[in-house]
Image 1 (cartoon, rainbow, N blue to C red):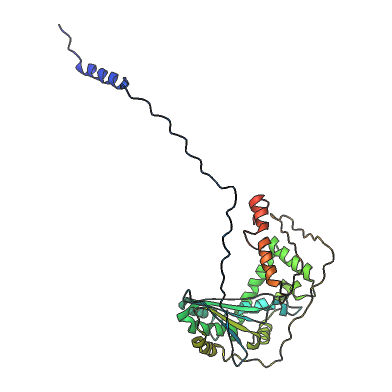
Image 2: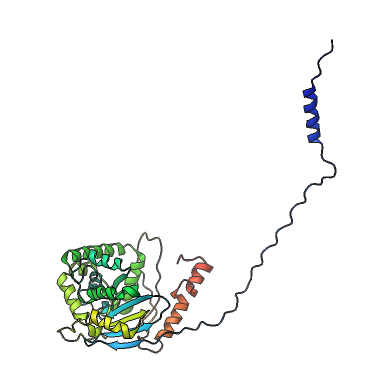
Length: 344
């Protein structure tokens, strides 16, 4: 008896053999050529020409109440930046009330012109405007940024903040508590510790720049002191209003007169400017302030500089910026970028 032939098995075997047999004439693929390495320059490119900076000349006007107004026209964008600077910086703080000027500036937008702080903030938001207040060593300041078309209404709100702050007792208590919290936090921050120690050592306790706010002084500041400080220093004869951007002095000055023309000169005598001389530092001295457990160290090096009216003041500002006043300055480039000694 003949056995049946298994044709399926033969077919599978033939297919397997054909698959395993290399095709004639097919060569293996060549390895890819190595990619060309990019060429990085080893020298810095040459500097291009210095940019030409054209600063518009301000147009100066004075209101009958003594407020100086400067108009700086630059119409690239339909916006206006308004800044009012006045006496009432920290150098005007009473010796026993350091922090009074800063506290006063903090209160200006906490309700003004009969509006609460929330109502004032909402009115500014509806105009798409931003407003801020602050105090430096030599001046108090209020800043406004708004679209040109909304300037009339926004300027009125700015005038309320400058001229007619409410100083509501509830907000005075809240801001005082916030300032006390910030002072307590600053005792654990090496940056704040170093800043306070530096200015007190360089200028001394008898110089206005050598004093800084303390918890004890802040607790002693009440609403009456804030009102009196504002009344003494926030006066049109002490102030300058600068409007820059899409401004036209001829059409805008009546607007400024409507907003600030009612600002009274004040009934008290003129406050004499603070005139002091920084102490002379004889020899190089190193002061150490120990802060156990601090993760980083703060290093401050300096001495009193030239007065603001010195012709070298602005050239020295440029020099100081080149040395260490920005992220790309020489100190940061050397210490951080080149050596990795510091974070910032």
